Image (tube, rainbow, N blue to C red; front, top):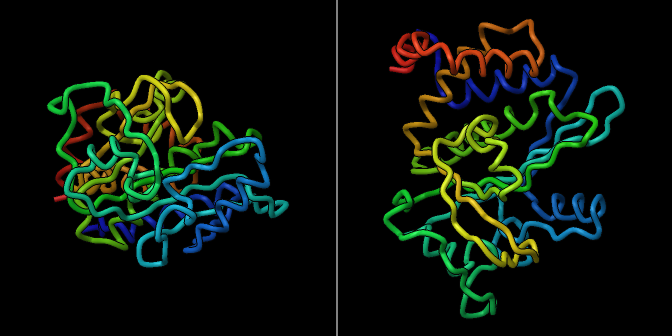
Length: 260
């Protein structure tokens, strides 16, 4: 049986990126990510959830990827990931702990959750949390966002095998385009806030995205099979094939059998 592990998927993704003209660097110092985005966008706030100014972010609980265009060495994409241990992830979001750390010392005002608690998945335990996704305009629509969100989840499972969930945060402009499910690959998108969002310093509709560990494992098996069937293709072609596959449901049982 073919190997369907997170590491096998990571290897396939790195090969796909290389064949598509990109190289990837893994870094466990998120200060580098902060510096990169601060220099690139000096007038925009950096996502506080991945800022070492507010959290203990060390090699054992966080990392980020930078993607370079091989033709000129320019960084054209990045994404972050961190491990969060929580007894109540929704409450940690409400208290702004995910962004600013200990509410007793951060001074951040709690947010007004947009829905009753029963509307949200019961996310708790060990949670991989992604953010800081950025793709240069010159490289958009090439499949990078699709691939980076999936590889970061596989790396969460590879680094922290007992992770229970993977989550993220999306603003309205992203959610209305169906990017959290169609591109990022999350299985749930729940309205979290409709109002002032301190990390962006604006009023927003903010959405919590989530996927369980079991769903991640199945997704890895499905997407790895897809990449293996398109080894001579570019990332954009694999993403096109993935979207075609979503409408071809008879294929899914066969892929699920491989995952088992």
